Length: 345
Image (cartoon, rainbow, N blue to C red; front, side, top):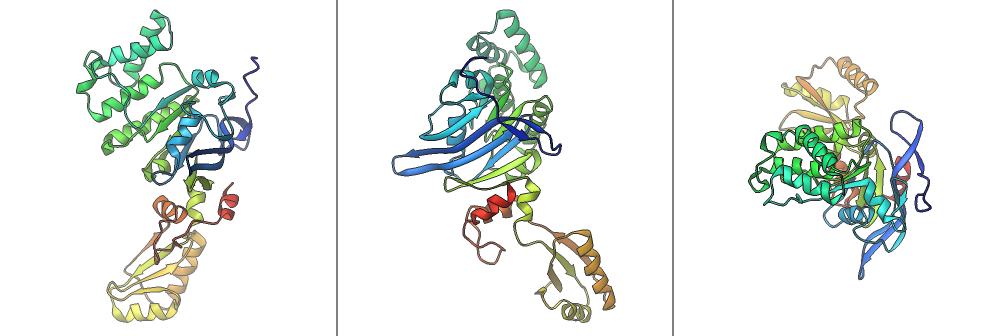
């Protein structure tokens, strides 16, 4: 093994409890531009064959993180490894093992879909036969074989994204960085991209995803980290992150004013909505809590017209953890203390 290749750190793949090699890892990664600190010491460990999502507000450092890990820019300090190669000392090894899809499709609009893929094969120094075979395979895989001879300039946004990702896969990468890959796509094209990502991971590829769409992270990611102020302020599965945010409640609605009043007396801590004749009762939404609440309501002889369970979603998580929450919505308006990060690790 060449000296530039370092042993891959071990981690745990979500759900199986067994050690697996970390496809991407960082320790105390730092980057500044002048007096502005963009990354202030971030630590990441991403198991192979998983999807990792990095969330954060605009300017949080998501793209900078991808640029460092893909060797496009150098870090000011700290360490990073990708596919077992040190980013600083073995950038060639990193580049040979990764694919990168940026925020904007990197296509030559004067070339056809097939020509774009063949150009990438030439740049990667694949043989002529291998390059043509790989091109044909990817055209069919991404459902663009029927427009293989059409210039990229005339492609829709979704087709351009599919071709862009196909070009990323010409070199059969182990790790793919997707930097906001579905920005500007319509919902159908976005979901098509999601299915493509899932199929890649099923084949053993590791995906590092940055996104502005919280539903996207919720749908795809095995683990999610929230980046704010140059630091990872929380990390965990989507469910772990949601569980840390207050605001889970059960909503009971009534059609009779008298029943509404009796229910209000039975739940003195509930938030009242006199206009809708509804109560909002704090609850974790679990089966035991719901059973207890309904038994208590039944003991009063009151019947609710309907009830619903509300739990925080990733929007709530994002607002709370990045300091953009507003008073009265269950958030504090300040960054979550670092002990939350430790709880989720």
